[in-house]
Image (cartoon, rainbow, N blue to C red; front, side, top):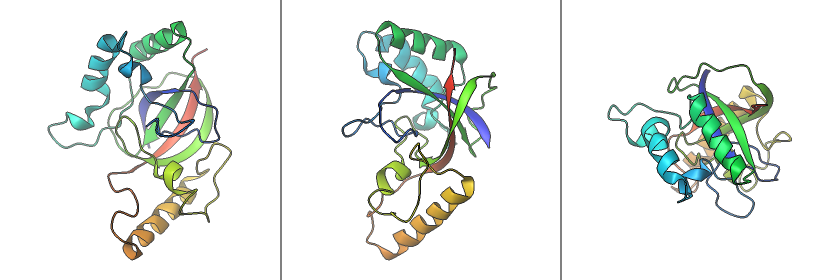
Length: 187
């Protein structure tokens, strides 16, 4: 797997600690939350659009994970969040997608598990949105994620079988990617 970079996510106190940052529903996190704050978005959003969420701006159709590989941007994002008393989490993302690449410094980190989500900015997660409602047979770890790559691959195989026997659009469709996630701590 390639180390792609860091996703800054608002902190919410729930059992799921994965990449889904769409902010839909009660107690859901937002990825890159300062981009929506009019007081600072003019600073954070242009860099995000040009360098992080490249999936929408890529002319060669290359898949790109919406993670940041520039530590100065991360430090500035964190500094602004702390100034505004916004609780946040930093997720280190590894995927099979080679872009972006992150020369990861040594961080204190906690392994969270494996997620299956969109590579773009809100990272809609099939694990978060389907396991509780459709695939009850799968056990998730204490962070609401799969503990091993083998377990998530079994889920993906079952998801593909399910799609063949159910009406179209029963499950979310799109380009999903396996994420190996760690929560990192800068201090």
